[in-house]
Length: 598
Image (cartoon, rainbow, N blue to C red; front, top):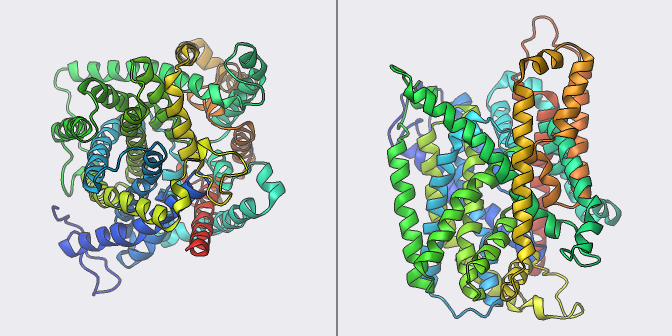
């Protein structure tokens, strides 16, 4: 890595200088061998025991800032590189649920080196695709990425004494409450029944009412359509509405993305066509290695080919199915990235199920082959989302783009190895994890190891022998709805008369809010209501409403006191603290639970 010419502000002389090989080795080792495996073991345990996992960005950001405290303000970049590496390791280790699904499906034993190589090829391709989209999602659309914002605020506060002084009560107060709430929702039955989550509520506090209210509108709309879905034969009596609504929701995000991307590409084409137009070099690129679009495209191309070849050689998938799976990665890395950026929710399992359905539509009815094809999309959505989330943190901090990408890549190498290792460890220590729960009676299923994510995978894979045309129809309906809604939003809000009315006073403001959040809500935000249960949408929306009310009623900064940055408003700090506290609680519960079963 290229050394960076930065003033030496180390608090302790024994620390390796910033930009030296010792410095980068310190950051990489802490991320790869300490924080990454710590978060990964927790994530794998949570997947095997309850069926979901908590991302490692926030936790690794907190612990990484402790490691780099001795570097002063420059430590924020080092901590960001640590959390990028650690989150890559942890996120990959969470993919061990896929290996459990292979066992449940009765897949013949695959040499470990082949699984590791396959996972690594997919992850490297996905990291490149995720980075390829960050100029659109992070810099042009400026999506919030609530967890990424939480990490950025934590790192800024912990490395700047003035920011720490002014934000400590809100940030650490939120963390404390998040820890208490995270433990309570796992231990108190009535609270768990409400489906309250500190991180969901905290994400709502960060994004505000114009995102939170559409999530409520979407959730209530899908809930109200439950009987309609049952009458159409799309749902069975007693099934949750999101079993079909998530397909419509994915279509909505895709439809809205078509509108936004068309506008973005049109603006880019116009700027390129302007004679003498020069690209500004971002401040982050003035020191250290420069990012290169041609190199990034070559990276994506190489690892895409490697993924296709690995799938064909190791698992017998045809070149057509592998190319289709890779093409879906380019689609879902964008769609899921938008969802993650706006709501902090990455619908990776939904992308897996949709991939299985599409492969079945194309004629692939072998569940084991479908599993290996859908693995490409599932792992990619997780890795690409992590890359976009991490880059949103780096963009806010001004961390070097090329360095951050390299740190993610080395984390993915370790993560690919640890994915196989941790899966074998858990299934050897607890043979019950090898038993296919989809063929068990309710009384036979192990209560301690519900493995809900694996259960969803295997259930979807077994259903491909009987494909259902209405599932494709649901996606198309969502696509049309999302496209039409976003087109109308853009058209109405681009009219000069409407802009003047919206800015004219309280009546204009209220009308604009109703149009923006209720009548024509953003498909990116309202689709959240199709991915989750209704209470989750309500809690997320409640956080958004409370945040906007506080901003409206909050007093102005005192005379002589500079305002905090826009993305460090009180509710953003407190919401980020809730997310961080919830992550710490999940880590603690995971470690205690793991120790209890070892």
